[in-house]
Image (tube, rainbow, N blue to C red; front, side, top):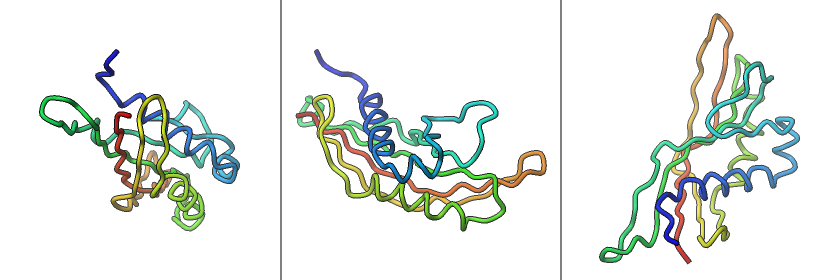
Length: 140
């Protein structure tokens, strides 16, 4: 059977890489989420989501690989990036320059850039710190 959407495999790989780090899981009390947090959940939270759902690489007409860009970050209710930096470092250790196989794909990943921004919601300050990660899913 031919897979037509590699995004679920990439999501699963990222989740597995992040949750395989005991230090990261401990730092956020297990709050590692795809796309959004749970209502009322405390901070900090690690979140990941696709910025680019995927671009196929073809050999003639055969899709041999999909490449996507993911935003992976820690979000904290804080006025400073300082308490988030160790968590962002753990995210990077879990993903940057990592490669493994999953569900018939060789997955590779590297960080393309830093993500760092603040926001205020109803007068409450939040900081976002992490990276943009390029993930490639190559069919085995």
